[in-house]
Image 1 (cartoon, helix red, strand yellow):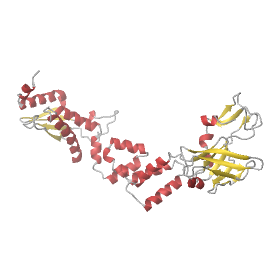
Image 2 (image 1 turned 60 degrees about the vertical axis):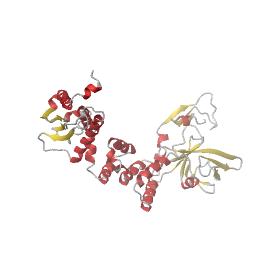
Image 3 (image 1 turned 180 degrees about the vertical axis):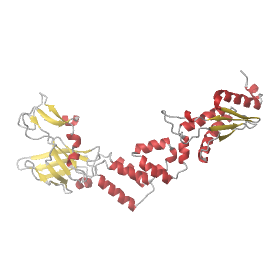
Image 4 (image 1 turned 45 degrees about the horizontal axis):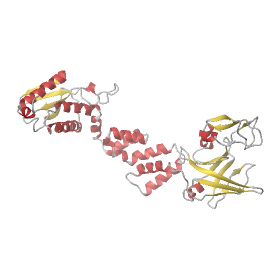
Length: 394
């Protein structure tokens, strides 16, 4: 093995010749010698090498006869890097100047890193060029020909979710600025919110705010704010008093042949409204529910539970009710006796309860459980197939 001093005595021309011969051996049929003094040659960048899952994503943009030309200056590799260029054998289809510059920039970066330590670099440069092509580098360079407005219009159709946008930006960083534009996120907001409770009011509110105070990234910020708000599990007093609830019992009072039917199929109370003064009003009341209900909470700003009270002639009733947020962004009030859900003006009541009614099962009463809801004998009951629901009192 030669010492560093001995390596430094090797003429530059010999180092260049040895590297050129190595490239000719490694790339064989893809190698073409152009000149021996100074040394210059080209290496074919084959189209068929850049396939992904047997589908060529860049074959429509990569000429079949694309070649990387390498020319050695006299000071290579001690002080300078080779000169690189893109050549074509005979095709009329050529890359755009921006795409050529993108390939050469990648190659030159690798070459400079090697020359800093006085090492030949052509093999590393060829591999870098191939990696650039196989990773979609030409796609990104080609997208640079489009304005951000044009890219944003394209993204507004392609991106059907925030995850889509994130994936596209990861694969094509050149679209990051376009991906923040209002046209992209306005479309995304509408797609996302249309599936959620309260879509109409949410959409109208966002449009009004945008018209009042338009901002370059308004719709992106609005989307993220609504997503964050959807994690909120408390109601404010003002919100609660603006909602209208559909009120249903977990179970009917009277079993039939020992089966206690669910009360979720039909409302017990319609158009239930919680007033600011503490009253609870009902648009429809069945025979066994009296008037005079009141509500209160000891946390006015962040309401996570309510206490409902009814003062009857013979007894007082006090019920602790929890506030829950549904996956569809709707609101639910739940206790061991009944469940209320906020009505969406755009939806219908069947959709409001679809998740619970779609998985009703027959639950057998354990022998050790005493029935507390009815004086009648109960052997089974209808209940949603949910652990919390199946743990409700009998």
